[in-house]
Length: 307
Image (cartoon, rainbow, N blue to C red; front, side):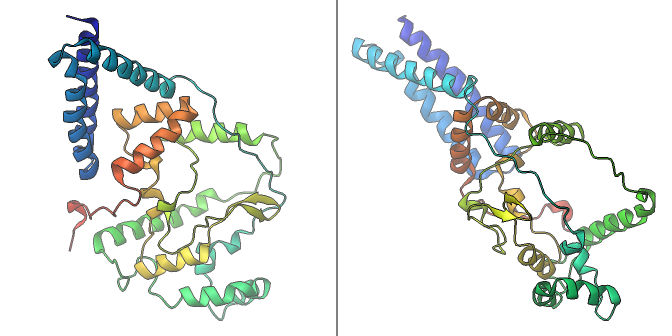
C-alpha cells in the first residue's frame, strides 16, 4: 500500500471520529442544525479522503498528498500557540457610579415619596423613560406576556431570599483601596469565576447577530462615559422590555459563543481560543456556520411547562 493511502486512511478515520463526536454532542444539546451538518460532513469528508484507496494512480497520490499536507498544516496553524491578536486598552474609572441610577433601583421608587422626588430632581432626564416602563405589568407579573407560574414564582422566591439575606451583608464599607492593574484584575476574575463554577470567561466582539430585541446594545464605537472610554447599553430600553414580558430576555447571553455547554467538544474549542488568535477567528466563523448567525430562540423545556 502506498504511504499516501495509509495517511488518507488515518485522516479519514480521525475526521470521522471527530465529526461523529460533534454530531452526538449536538444531538444531546438539541442543536438540530449543527447535528445535521456534522452528520453530512461525517459522510462527505472521509469519503473524499479515501479516494486514493479507490483510485490508485500517481496523479491522485500527488494531488491528494498536497491537499492532505495543506490540511494538516492548516489545522496546526490554528492549534499551535499564535500571537494573541491586538491588545485591549484599559481605562481606569475616574468616579464612582451612582447606584441609584441602576434600573432595579429606579424600579423601586414609589411616586409621592421623598425618595422619588429627590431622585428625579437630581436626574430629570430619567423621568420620561421611567414613566414609560411603569406602564407595563412588570417583572414576575401574572399579566406579563410570557407569564409562567412555575418559573415566575420560582424566580420571585429567589429574589425574596436575597432580600432576607440583606441584613447579613450590612456593614461599614472598607475605605482602604488596593492598587491593582486592570489586566491582573481581569485575570483574577477569569480564574475566580471558573472556581465558582463558570465554564469559561471572556470578551467577544459584538456581532450583527447579537441584535437586541429592545435595541439596547449599541454597535457604535465606544464613547467616553463617566471619564472612561467604553460601551454602555441603553438600560432603559432593556428594562422596559423586561417589564413587558415579565422576565429577563437573555438573548445576548444565549447567542454568545461562550454560552455553549460544558462538555468535551466545546471545552476543546475553548482551549483553542486561549491558544491562538487565528483559531478564535476561525471558531467564530464555524460557530456561525453550525448554529446560524441568528440562532432561533429555543423552545421551553418540558419540565418547565407547569400549568
